[in-house]
Image 1: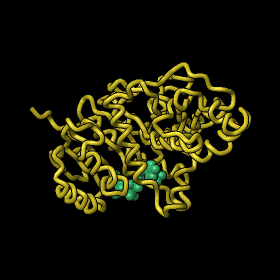
Image 2: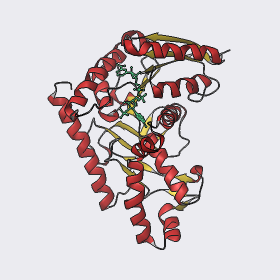
Image 3: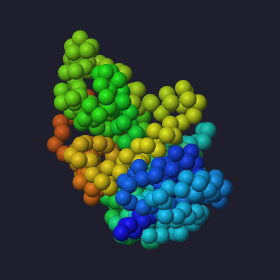
Length: 337
Ligand code: NDP
């Protein structure tokens, strides 16, 4: 007998990432072949037409797993009974916009959405925030959903940064992405993030050793990680915009699908990266939504503890956490939290 459909709500569904997400979710890429889905598309009134067009195309795909598509501009309707929420729609930074203005604009989106999730979503709902500034938007949504939904059910996307890091290492080491394990993204999904290869391996060999062999020593390997790898991963979004003339939509959608897939179905012991609500791991203040190396057994992401960070890595991580704290303070000053 076919299982009950899983209700998946996508905000900003009429946008570019929405367009890249919907068809793959409906095809079963996120939840697997055995799980039918019901899609709920939330848009602001001016985005509804675009979402409606995508819904027509979904119908034309005749996906066997798709048990309906519903559209709304009302969060309480779109999140009703939702099992999984992907919060994609966000206010982009406009010209001359200060960080406080950006945070305030997004608090006006993620506060009410979090509150609606807390009131009407399924008891075991899981939420991933894609829309930037993703970590702090997730913090706002989680705070607004309390006490209906525990904060740890909210996460933010750093899987794209993780995948970018894996891609860079695979290229540098003439390996395949599947050969690389143990990469970690620490901190904020911003230019301050710390992509960390210190515990990474390539076909079981430490990445640092494999790089040293190729580049002529450990010092050269460290210099490549500091001067090429870290800035390239952190600025990859800008590189894509420059080369493609448009933002990294397909890879962002792919990362969001992998984030939810691995959270729901488990990572099989492999480490990935996700921004989760800190319980104080690695000294990160409790409650911040911070990226860590994580694993999932299918019951949500859990931080991989006990990894060593060297002095330089610790300094990079602390700088990114300081940025998250400053964002939280800015939001608190707005009276949102
Ligand atoms: P996109 O679908 O391209 O992007 C949506 C969000 O994802 C942005 O915040 C963007 O951040 C973020 N993002 C995260 N990672 C990436 C990445 N690698 N590449 C690109 N973006 C990334 O935006 P559109 O403008 O096409 O669509 C947004 C939709 O959301 C619109 O249809 C709009 O109507 C809707 N919307 C809904 C709101 C609501 O639900 N209340 C509020 C505002 C908009 P960044 O800005 O940093 O690129």
